[in-house]
Amino acid sequence: MKRAILLTVLLASAVSFGQKFDVSDLSSSDGPISFTGTTKILKTGTACVVTAHNNSSHSLMAVRITTDAATSHEWDQPVEFQYDGFFKESGIAPGLDFDVVDEGAYSAVERTYVNGSLVEPPSPNFPCHAKAKVLFIQFEDGSDWGDYEIKKDVMARRAKNMATLARLVEAYDTSGQAAFDAALNEPEMKGVGFYLKGEAGYRKIAPIELARKRLAAAQKHQASGIF
Image 1 (cartoon, rainbow, N blue to C red):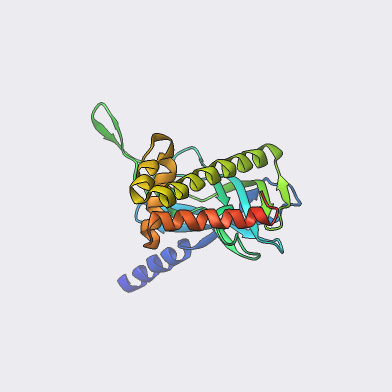
Image 2 (image 1 turned 90 degrees about the vertical axis):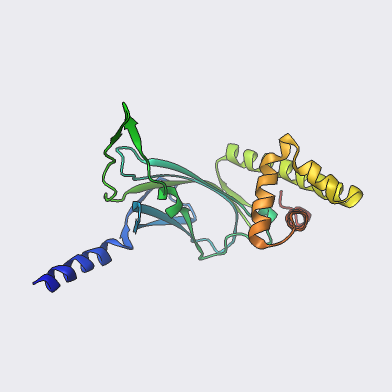
C-alpha cells in the first residue's frame, strides 16, 4: 500500500512538472510571434514560464513584448521583454523558441514581516496563467511591425549605444587600457560598463574585445541600410 501511495505522488509530480498552459495573446492577429506556457516546479514553488516562437520566415532583429504571468500572490507579475540584435552578428532565427518570462522571475523567496512576526507566505503551488502582447518587431531586412513610438525608442537607444561603444574603442586605441577603464567607470557609463564587464567575464574575453565586436556588428548592419 505504501508503495502504491508513493507511486501516485511521483506520478502527480511528473504531471505538474512541465505541464503546458494556454497563454492569452493580446497581439494583433497578423503578428509573427506565438506563445506557449509551461508550468515548472522549482524549489521556491511554481514558475509560469512563457515561451515565444518566431513564426516568420525572417530573423528578428529587435523585439519588444509585454507579459503578465501568475504568481503565488493575488496579482500577476508584469514582465517586459526587450531584445535588440543590432549589436550582434545575427538575430532570433525563423522557427526559434525564446523565453520571454523565464524561471528567474520566480527564483526569489519573498518574506513579509508585520510587527516583527513573519507572515505566512502564499502557497507556492498555484495554477499558471499568462497574457502576452507583442509591441514591436524589426526584421533582419530592416522592415518593422508594431508601435511606431517604440520603434523611435529602439532607434534612439541604438544611436546612443553606438556612440558609447565608439567612444570606448577610441579611448583604448588612442590612449590604451587605462583610458578605456577610466571612460568605462564614468558615471554616465555605469550601465554600459556593468554590461560589458558582466558579459565579457561570462565569455572569458576582455571588455575591449567585446566592445569591438558589438560596435563592428552594429556598423555592419548600418552599412547594409539597417538603423
